[in-house]
Image 1 (cartoon, rainbow, N blue to C red):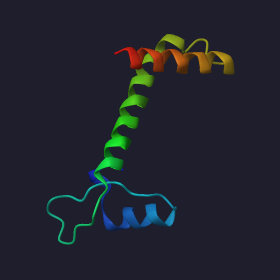
Image 2 (cartoon, rainbow, N blue to C red; image 1 turned 120 degrees about the vertical axis):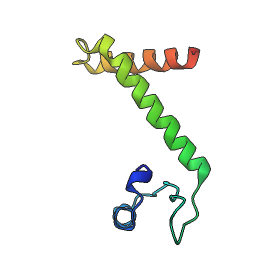
Image 3 (tube, one colour; image 1 turned 45 degrees about the vertical axis):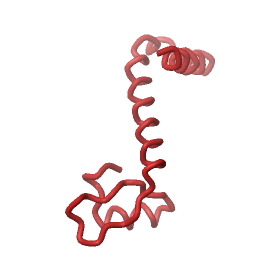
Image 4 (tube, rainbow, N blue to C red; image 1 turned 60 degrees about the horizontal axis):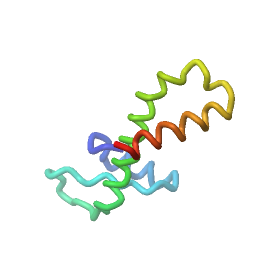
Length: 84
């Protein structure tokens, strides 16, 4: 969820599905809620990692039909991300 989806209905649905909404409230909310900035930053790091993995996936798209090749791709992508 991003701030675009921080409405009361969406937030209630996330809680109903037993998720933890970590979206900070918009500045113009009348009744803002407390948010966990650390958890929000970790979520952002995870989203950026998936975006980078999607970019590297093009290199391995022809060979990921085998489980071994997919795990090898993940290891390679995470090593490249760690070296940067």
